[in-house]
Length: 336
Image 1: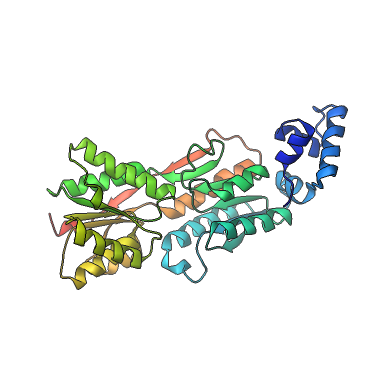
Image 2: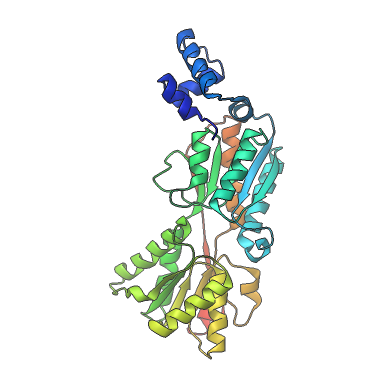
């Protein structure tokens, strides 16, 4: 396993930031400390050339983009396509290139990151999703690689740069909209529970119940291992059999579309709202009410944050919040 700056710092009995300054020959560090750090680097076989130097100086003019989706499934998740478009627009505007990697698991994502960093292929990284105990962020922070993430990284990574919607408020508003139809048994149809987007939207859903003084039936809450239509189909099937929901608040359009497919097969019609405002949701029958999260803007803002860091430009905050907009169509308007 490759040694890290943290390993060198521990052996030399200094901070990781001191090791970084030694690598870049900072005049603020004494010769005695420099010698101690360099001896530790030599002892551990640590070679900073491929990582720290080129990353700090921005020599490659390339940003690495890790997409947690296989290339074959990419077009079934329009969010990633639109966010990638935004990243590409901003990167091109700022004179940067993009290097993509598709993955299906966290270990695979870390492997790609190691390849990008150790071979000095990129100046910084954009991660397309945030998770609890995120191995990608842990690796990037240990190597002091500049990065930005689309999604809220949580309190584990207080220094991370990130861009997100106010997913808490967006799902609160969705749930409140369904309450406004005179309904009370609103089911939550969510995706991967470890992802921040699922956690934040579930919190917003629960808060809407609390604010409206309605008891929450835990059987109305369902999360899946993915965000595909088949996950929504199975989720709706389970919820309708055990919990008798009156409506669905789905954390993704694909989940909502799967639920609609099951309801159509069973000749059931209930209000449902999704997220991402996909083209498929807007043209299918009935047309799907959905929250537009402006994924292209998420991509633009993530790229802008990262590039400002790479150029050592001042940042007033290390995060950006992008607005959302609920677009009502037949799956709620039909019930008004």
